[in-house]
Amino acid sequence: MSVLIHPLVTEKTTRLSQEGQKIVFKVTKDATKPQIREAIESTYTGVKVAKVNTMIMPSKPKGRFTRSGYVAGRTSPYKKAVVTLSEGEINIFEEI
Image 1 (cartoon, rainbow, N blue to C red):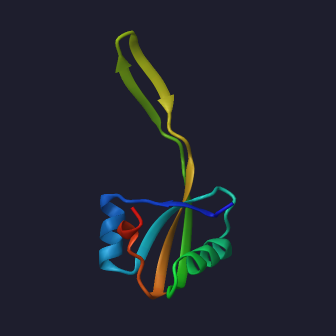
Image 2 (cartoon, one colour):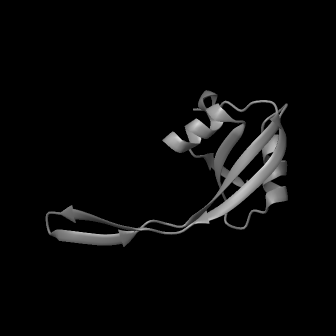
């Protein structure tokens, strides 16, 4: 099983990748920083990882209105990793 689930593409992560050599990935909950570093360097050739920062994003309440009324729920919590590259470049849009 792979440690990396998929790259996160938002306005903030796009700005991070343009300003610095930072790429944000959604990773498995039990992934450690050395495992994430190894997975990035083995998946993408010519890339060296300088630093990995991880954070667990909590679940958030979400609700929506339907024909029968209001339906309340929650989003799933997940772990994300901000990977700072020292060498190379990752273009996540080539894979799509």
